[in-house]
Image (cartoon, rainbow over all chains, first blue to last red; front, top):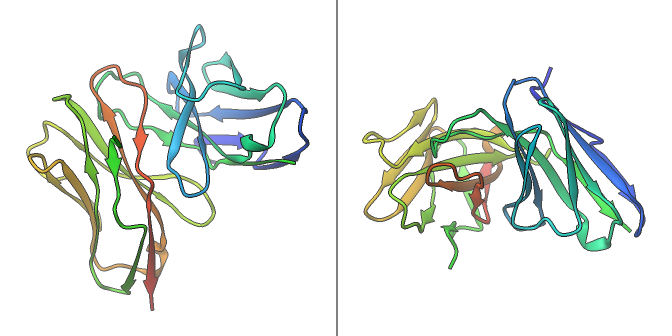
Length: 115
Length: 115
């Protein structure tokens, strides 16, 4: 089984709808992240969490919210989806380590289309 | 200014040849980490290799090696004996300093291996 799973893998929704993307991990890592990838671009950080009580905004958090329900679960919500939130969304995890070489491991991604 | 620059939008290589994917970076930190990820057409992000700024030797991982030239601020990925399955997008990323949470990604290079 994959260490980092994301559900759903694909989702089509309409403008104004609320949608939640879920991430679960079995790696036992404390840190979890949400990124988005737009066509032709690298990934950009939306939110990250050090543990259940510690959630931080990334560089593009507007229009998104998150919930860390447990060490293993980190959800991303779009309260009112808009078309420019159409993207590929990735969850990632890393172990507690302040070294800059702390490696992030990514889930398979969720392809979201907002019509 | 971009922190990670990948100047090759696309590369075409014959199977079994070696290939070098370029990556230059910009940072004023002394402590940082450099990563390469592979993204096949299925979309997932696969961690390949990392190099710490204080590592004196170039990182190697199977057929992957990282040609790290600190003075030139370059961290090129070398794939030896390329295979058809190496066809994918490749992203260079950097994590700066201690406690930094964000991976900064380049725009990627699309590698196509021809039979």
